[in-house]
Amino acid sequence: MPRIAVYPGSFDPITNGHLDIIRRSRGLFDLIIVAVNDNPSGDYLFRGEERVRMVKEILGDLSHIEVERFEGLLVDYARDKGAGFIIRGLRALSDFEYEFQMDLMNRRLNPHIETIYLMTNQEYSYLSSSIIKEMVRLGGSTSGLVPDSVREKLLKKMKG
Image (tube, rainbow, N blue to C red; front, side):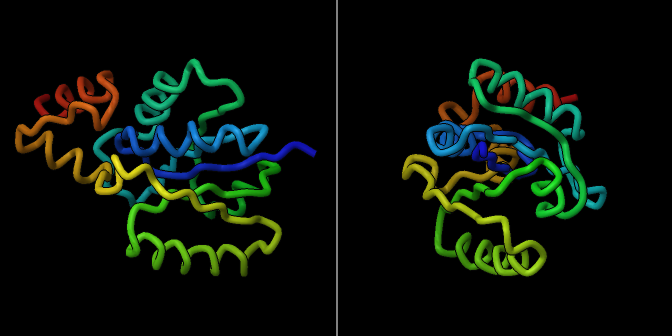
């Protein structure tokens, strides 16, 4: 049976921290589905299809990776995809507290799906999509924090 994992997130925008988790996860699973959350109540800079396109563009050269939009409960989505695992990245203790709570709820909803946690690379431990958007708004450099194509899209979106 193939080991299928879902790596969920808003990816608004995708950062080098996200990419680090994806690349490091590839050796653990036969297939990773990067699931771009498109929650109708979410406040996103990029529309769902823009985020999916951006992630696909960046991950285009990686095998055994799929990118899709999803809405609703993550455990339902994972079950429908035949995934037995959810991948989550941890940056700090505050991430763990939130993720622990989510894991307990997910296990209650579907005890057959396991959550796998990967510690982020120290280089990206402070990085989040929100911080990236704020840096761009304030004219800061995102060099080394997001792929160049993402930086260009951010600048265009925020100035347009």
